[in-house]
Length: 120
Image (tube, rainbow, N blue to C red; front, side):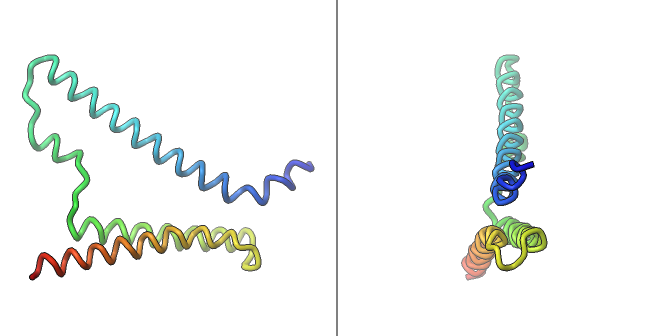
């Protein structure tokens, strides 16, 4: 039971690392499948439709930045709430959620600046 005493302070770090690993693994798997599909199309002599390539590119529009920013802010707030409930306010584990909030705020700012730029 002594090992549980060691794991409790490390739990937020393990949780964040696990979530990041899962996200990166799923992206890697998706890109691998996309590349396999393109290789098969090339090997069979088919043309690659422009729509297929555009479907798998990340859009760089003001709306996409705003959408990504709002998602990150919500995820950051959720992390703050969960870690605050688990460990209390005196422990600073909840501050890990601030990272997502601030990155989300920066995405929203970029989206708003892009909107202003396109309107001029």
